[in-house]
Amino acid sequence: MLLFLKEDLSMQPSITLNNGVSMPQFGLGVWQAQDGEEVETAVTTAIDAGYRLIDTAAVYGNERGVGRAIARSKVPREELFITTKVWNADQGYDQTLAAFDKSMQRLGLNYLDLYLIHWPVPAKDTYLDSWRALEKLYAEGKVRAIGVSNFLPEHLERVLNEATIVPAVNQIELHPRFAQKNLREFCKSRHIAVESYSPLGGSGGDLLSEPLLQQIGDKYGKSAAQVILRWHIQHGLIVIPKSVTPARIQQNIDIFGFALSDGDMMSIDALNTNSRVGSDPKTANFT
Ligand SMILES: NC(=O)c1ccc[n+]([C@@H]2O[C@H](COP(=O)([O-])OP(=O)(O)OC[C@H]3O[C@@H](n4cnc5c(N)ncnc54)[C@H](OP(=O)(O)O)[C@@H]3O)[C@@H](O)[C@H]2O)c1
Image (cartoon, rainbow, N blue to C red; front, side):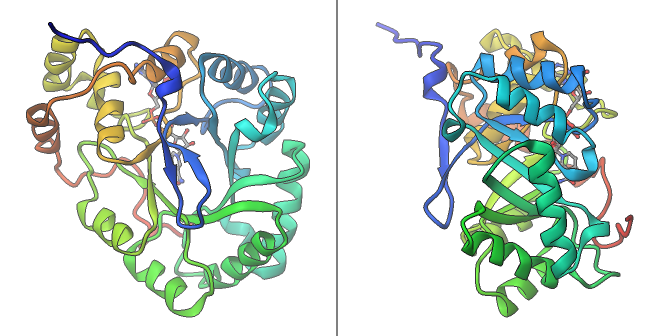
């Protein structure tokens, strides 16, 4: 007799970070969600649908709306996992500490789950100072885990060589067309969890209309988006698709009742063309 996996959102997996903190493997990204009603509705819809991880950033300009949705939610604070990021213009030790306080005020939180350095900005050469500020916030218990975003091995090596705490997470662009095999291997060898951003190929991309993903989805009765998100989960990645569309928010979390076969995983792996949709951290110097 065939046994089918029951659709059960309680089966949502978690990742244990290198400091022992448990982080949901799946969550909502809110870049480009407008502050106010749009982001509040998205976060509320997500939490109601079972999301527990929310990914924002100071530069997204929507921390207030995210905070209002959290405050309104009936889910206890300790069951949620909230990430925000220090923006490039606020790099430096004192600047990062001040930026953290402002983010916390906007979010209306008294502790954060994960604080990330948004970009390395090598031309500024201040990410080590920011990292020391994150270490202080962590030591003071204001944040449960600290990490980085858009860091290449050369940036991580400097942090590992000169700092005390190993980043818990590196949040990077990652999707079937930009699979980041080398960076994933590097992070794995240093016990740094990898979090995929633009996991569906980003808002301007055409990954979702890739025929292979639709064909695979038809086999499982799932959409191309659900197939891609399942690919991230089965690769052990943390994944934060963005949507402000309630039906999509609900669809995107409905991925824990099926599993892609090894063959389908390999076919999706073969879509990799090392093509970014976002900026290259080597040269991205925007402030
Ligand atoms: N650290 C960084 O530098 C960085 C950079 C980029 C992103 N991120 C984070 O990663 C999150 C996700 O990345 P992203 O926003 O670039 O792109 P993404 O999640 O790959 O794609 C978002 C786009 O896909 C659409 N979409 C979502 N679910 C869909 C579905 N089921 N079917 C069809 N379309 C769907 C969304 O439209 P609607 O919203 O209109 O539904 C939106 O246009 C961001 O929100 C942010 O939190 C971080």
